[in-house]
Length: 313
Image (cartoon, rainbow, N blue to C red; front, side, top):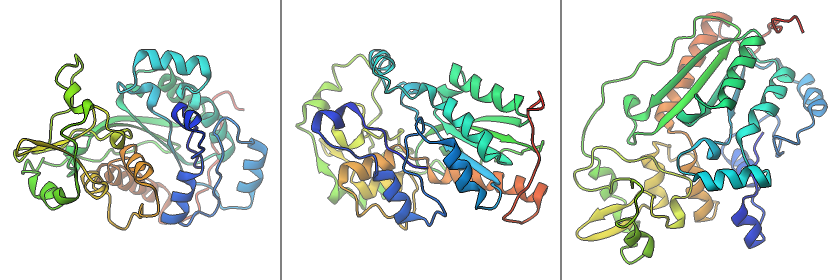
């Protein structure tokens, strides 16, 4: 299921991009079923009917909206989103209802670190435990898994089988990042004169460090990267400031070239990359989940189990 929520800036400009991520799924994968539906409005009866025609589900992976858990969104904007119902805090509720229908052997939830201590995170974890799942929670840093950026992500693995083993961190490489940046520099826009760049010096908020010839890692790239905001990631070299190109952002996220975003407009391409997972970090987590399923189920595509809630429902 893929759906890009209509944001305030979309409504202001009269555009609807709710199909972008669904189209991206079709371009870059071959799903058996693709639902381009708002998670709050998906009909569970219809979902159940569709799944009845498919093999049992071994893994249900949820990347729930993280905006309202992120420090990048201001408290005022979070309050406003509660009032206009654009908040993402309550996405755990429909996700849990879907899990009851899907009945997977393993549930994987990915979000920003603040999700772990939130009420939504507590509700998600407690309900899954009450349903009979064994829970493992992790906050992992991409740099510990060969990534270029220090992107931290929260992962919850809920399994009907005990004994999930998290991925083991690697020794950080610590090398200079400049060779990666330099080969893309000619395609990076000079944004030295932008007001948002000048505003970085006067803001009270902590800004991400510039990428320079001495950098050994990249700050976390956000989905707002292409909009010229002051807290985006920028390159500083020779007295000039540059905005990373789409290709550079993709490489800094360690996302392979085979992931095709060439068909998107530049803003949507950068947004898709910026809100994505770091590929190397996520690959390590998925490898651990795959190993866990292989140990408990063997190398089969069909996984059957009889999980019930602790109340017997």
